[in-house]
Image (cartoon, rainbow, N blue to C red; front, side, top):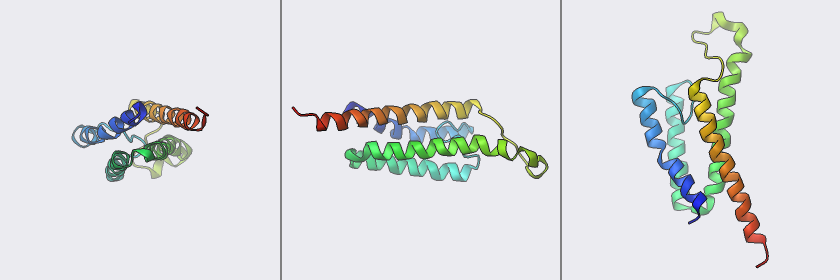
Length: 133
């Protein structure tokens, strides 16, 4: 088991802790781009599924982590940009959450770091496999 696979597993093993922080204290660090709690809870389930896949099929951990982290960052960017793009419709919106909150910033740094680490680890692993001995 490579070091990057271990880091990915720890990343996913911590998902229940992030869920607990979100459910009990309302602090969403793992998926801060989704404002609706139900959608966040589904995403936590998706992350747990990703963790199970990484556990039982470690060879897929690079692909699974890159896919999940990319989706997470995409949701985060949408969560920041959509309120800004629709700011002209303030009278139609009940709650406006504009900008990059500290929770979203932590989510971006956490997810982005894992994505970059995983990408470069996968790249190094591919290069290592194709280099002649």
